[in-house]
Amino acid sequence: MSTLWLQHPQAIYTGTPDDAAGGLVVETDTGTVAELVPAGGTPHTPADAVYDASGHVLVPGLINTHHHFYQTLTRAWAPVVNVPLFPWLVNLYPVWARLRPRDLELATTVAMAELLLSGCTTAADHHYLFPDGMEDSIDIQVSAVRALGMRATLTRGSMTLGEEDGGLPPQTTVQDTDVILADSERLIQTYHERGPGAMVQIALAPCSPFSVTTSIMADSADLAARHDVRLHTHLAETIDEEEFCLERFGMRTVDYLDSVGWLTDRVWLGHGIHFDDDEVARLGAAGTAVTHCPSSNMRLASGICRAVELEEAGSPVGVGVDGSASNDGSNMILEVKQAMYLQRLRYGAEQVTPERALSWGTRGSARALGRDDLGTLAVGQQADLAMFRLEGLRFSGSHDPLSALLLCGADAADRVMVGGSWRVTDGAIEGLDVPALIAEHSAAARRLVAG
Image 1: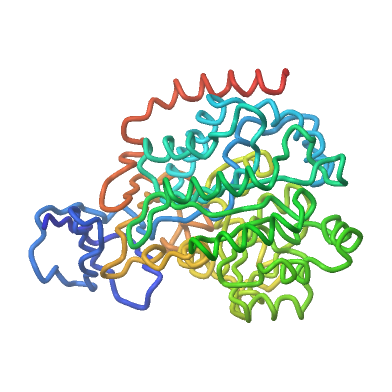
Image 2: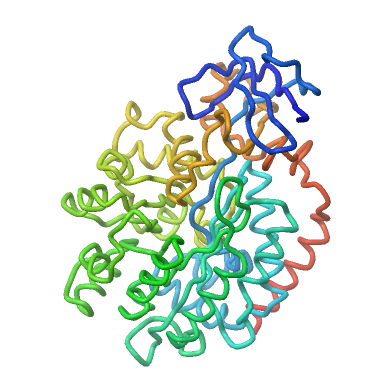
């Protein structure tokens, strides 16, 4: 086996109680962590290569559990800058309905590249938009993911409840249930990888209570159980959504979730803001995970997730950047910082430490995606990690390196490793022409909003 010792980091967060102040050893052939080196120690077996990490803060690869890659094409679009969720969606749906295959390829590459540069090694995308000509959307995303060498949970989303049936989406963006289920099964059988080290996984993800029927929710749950894949949806993001559920289904959001067979540990929920005490307890007892999306929740004035209470009740809590039109960025290290600050508003500084916020963006996010091989730096885990340099004026005068990572606002990783392979070196993605990508992506964005 070929081994690499990441030696004597300036600081290290492993997500475990183990001492790794001396760094860690990676088996590059298997892409796993071989050894944690304690302070003052050396590896039990001399490493084949050594990298001096003394100028870096080293953390597990960050894991983004909720995103909409295609929305990088509609960032900071003037007509929706100052509106809440429902009118935001109503204005954007007709624009998104014009999406074409190359647009999605560019948007996915931009989103994942931005995530990778921010220290993110695994990303979940919630793609629910399949207008005519976009039937192969997930296939397009798989190709983009593989080209970048990241891990991804790509969700086969769906919308079945159009405007004519009392939903929000235009009819041109909804699909028949049979089409959705057949394509979901095809994608699982074609792309879903299992076991430690999986690079691409497929999940099923009806969009939201206000854009799908109860039948597609129940049928998706059955299909997911049959194929042992995970389930994802938006839930309890706004008061408007709660009122929609009460009016249409005669029940609150968690009761609705339960009624369609989704109150389980197979599920992770996007946002999860407006839960009462009983609902928090029920979600925790079921092991249903919640993705905290702080920037989006502030951007759309949706509210503050009860992250600490959900976690203490038993729900895995992860972090998501959400769509790049409701954030309007795809930066995971900054999102972890936002999670820490927004949760401090609700629970106070003592309860929400930098370490706790990092745990949400790593171990908690891994649990939300059903991954026990990611999210910590421990022997046998996948060697997914991010290394940050605390350089420049923003870090001048800082004392504790791990706290400075969030408090002083690190926004870009210097090095990122996925499965034992460097994907970012010296702040640049291996093999990606970023200026050319920006030029074509920006042109596509202009065309899309122009109609």
